[in-house]
Length: 385
Image (cartoon, rainbow, N blue to C red):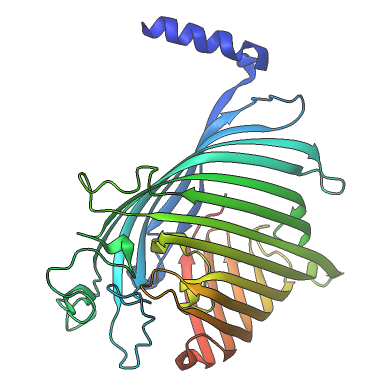
């Protein structure tokens, strides 16, 4: 079939949807940083979105056909023993860090229904798509360290010789290369307003990711890679504007309560699928996690530009991690409670430059060594489109 015939067929297929109104687009939706690289200032990852606008399968309701592309450098740490899956307490403070370079492509279709009653959002949206994830693990590097050659991969306690299949860390099988395909489905309900000054309203996202081994996730003849998991998650938030006063401009205060639930189970769960954590602790090995964060945010008036402001945030976090411990030989069952309170001062400039100082008190954590006061200070570049 010639190229002209293919274009003619596509044109005829799109005629009912007003093909002349369709337009392609591309944008950067996020950038990421890590503290161990370039002092956490320069981005090491970028998330981009490409798609088609103007496609309305239902009149006056948004239809999205899009591709999300993510490329990123991440720093990770062993939380489970690779050969047994036993949880690592790390009492001797051994360096367990390593780096991962990853690339992820999601082809997604989403259809919206109805407009929200208060803020005119797409109130109900159904989505589905295919996600392809590739990553390569390698030795951590630290240009300020005297011991630049030491690596967790050289530690025979965790990575004994002549072993290439790891129950506790299936993403590190073989040479640390992972390739995973998943089918993702989602439901979103949204009546939410977000601005530089305050947030108000609510949203709920329900998502399911299916990555069985037979979805080309076990191909030993090509790559020594293996994934097999199912993930179900619910996240949402409710925000309420408490006050807005005229004090050298508009000062806003709002209350926001955010909720997360995750169920994650399977015979081989890679690290990237374990997306929930608490204050950097390694609780992600539980197959069920519930987190709730209650924040009271005070935002200063804008200065110079609308995107410039200072935020004072009071944080109250509670959570539970429970159920079966994933990626183990024994399938142990456990429970942990999590809790912290804290405050954070944050400065945002031009919606790109972000600086913060935080002080938190962790009064209950899965790793008791991390309890107590925590002081944090950082700055980074990230654009949110």
